[in-house]
Length: 451
Image (cartoon, rainbow, N blue to C red; front, side, top):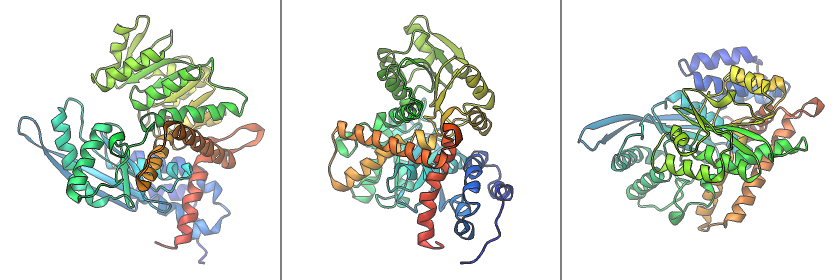
């Protein structure tokens, strides 16, 4: 084996920034991982010689394509679509499809990079990928969404497959959109195969997939609290977002005896000091999913709640915080406010919702802080189980899947403890997740040689 010159962290990051100019989200994601990995591989020559981190931080491929579709008025519309296939060292590429005007190549590269480590942590044989479009489903008719999904899949289908790349849903892509895309894939290929996850139960989907990401984030939170002999019961929780992940995280907090104080959307957040009960959560699910309403309408329905326009909920005093909306929604000052207000644990339901400054604040305060690649892996874990069910032409019962989800989240927690345990009983879950995910992928890459 050739002996390499060890590149230091700063030189590595300068190269990442140079190669990925104008892609700040991707650079941020790589830096957050590299801060821990460089320390871990300092005395491990094989990782240096084979340039493993450099190779993981360069996607296997980025596919970009044009998506043409016709709106209800007969106008031709043109969007841009992508699929980022980051790494398939341990299994087929796996990761969601996002439809949102904020989608860029940088955002998808960061998500695919994170997904690589997240999927490795689950223990399931899945690589990392992500895709999407700058298409905005809001304000579009059902038939416009159908036509867009069909056009998107007409371009995407040639790059995916049950043993190649298996997309799922994400922001702007739920069961309806998965259905339209799967129908188009089936029409083009004449195959009924497990090429997408998040499907309807009638045609190959899995029970508890909808709940899995939010529930999983709370299961991970439980595991963290248990290391200190504590639990969720009796504690107040602040949650951002009001979509699938946020509402199911809120639901599980309530089931475990906690009190949820906030939910939010792009317009602001609502604060309900009486607590957001299961009945209220059910109302939010219906209002946001079926009526496509705004979270501020909650205050007209439930007296005592207040709406705070254009703000995030991190100033509300709480013991538990779950950012479940989007990337970089919790900044350094927000993290300092949470710490000052007595927050003891943060479990990320979204992908990279805390910026680097906020991550450093939580680490310095030695909070129980779970990064998204560990705590929100429940969704992709159940997607992996859906892939297994599709391959075996069978389906598991709900109680079986719930236990599998709990076991997977406990396994991820154990991997984080293995590599993140510090002196004095403190666990750096960010370090543990980064190293635990990296080592599995890296060792597979070493076994394959330079490919």
